[in-house]
Amino acid sequence: MFLILVVTMFLAGCLALPIKDPYSYSSAVGQGVGTPFASYGEGRITGVRVWETNNNYYYYYYYNNYNSNNYISGFQLRYGNTWSPVFGNEGSVKQVMELFNDEAIVEVSGKYNPADYICYLVLTTNMGRTLSAGMPNQVSFNFYPTNMGNELRILSGRFNGAGITSIGAHWGLVDMEGAGNSTLETHIFGGNFTSITFS
Image (cartoon, rainbow, N blue to C red; front, side, top):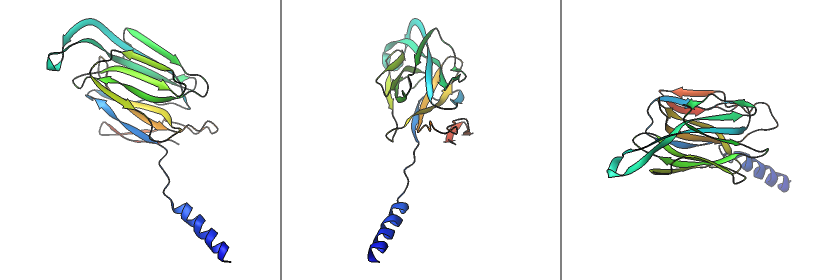
C-alpha cells in the first residue's frame, strides 16, 4: 500500500514539472526599417536561395572606415516542394543550397551594418554544410536554437527597396509524421512579430 502511494506521488510530481517550450526565437538584428516579413510554408525547409548585391564601389561608413557595399538583397526558402515568395529583392548574385533528406538548418550567422543592411549571411546545417552570401564586414551575429533537436522554421525581419534591413530566426521541431507542421499562421502586431503559431 505504501509502495502504491510513493509511486503515485512520484508520477504526480513528474506531471507537475514545467514543460519546456519546444520553440525559441533569436531576436532580430539590424536597422529594422521597411516592410516586415516572415517566411512560411508546410513541412521542413528543403532549400534556400540568397541574393546579394555587389555594387563594386566603396562608400563611407561610420568611424571613417571604407568597406565594400555588398549586402543581402533578398532570400527565399523552400518548404517541402514549394518555394516561398522572395523576401526583399533578387540581387545580382544568387547563392543556392538544396538540403539532403534529414538535413536541417541549425545555425544562422553573419554580419550587419547598424546603419543599413544585413551585409553577410551564413546558413549552417546539421551535416556541417554552409551557404554564405555577402561580404563579411561590420557587426557579427550568431543565431542557434535554445533546445536540442530544433531547427530553423522561420526567418523574419524587415526589408526595403534595396535589401534586407533586419533578420531574426524562429526555431522549432518538425513533426515529419503528421501533416500539421505548418508555419502558415503568423501574427503581426504593430509591425513586430510577436507570436508565431505552429499547429
